Image 1 (cartoon, rainbow, N blue to C red):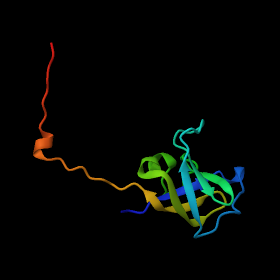
Image 2 (image 1 turned 90 degrees about the horizontal axis):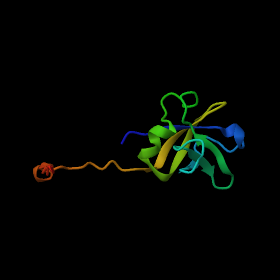
Image 3 (image 1 turned 135 degrees about the vertical axis):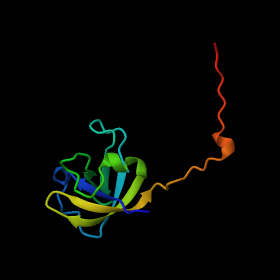
Image 4 (image 1 turned 90 degrees about the vertical axis):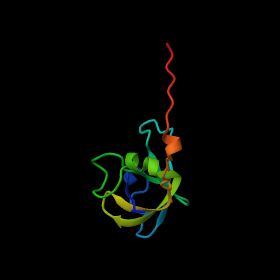
Length: 120
């Protein structure tokens, strides 16, 4: 399976870059009830709390990473990322746990047979 990368942003609203270091594992949690973004995913460090959000805007998503909207259906409600790079405004992470498995649907000839009932 191809590796998935995300950008964490919005750190200035929390603790800045202080809680981040290359190799650090961060838990990401979907936030369905977020009033500003229905695809919001917060980044959480256990001893600290929320430290940012998965970027979901063309202005905040780093090149080569997936936005919250693009990764939302590919991950479970909670998933884990590992910090790979840190810039002055972004933290680039690789998804290391919590990806949904791609389940292939196998359709047999019998399954593909369709029956229609037309009512007048």
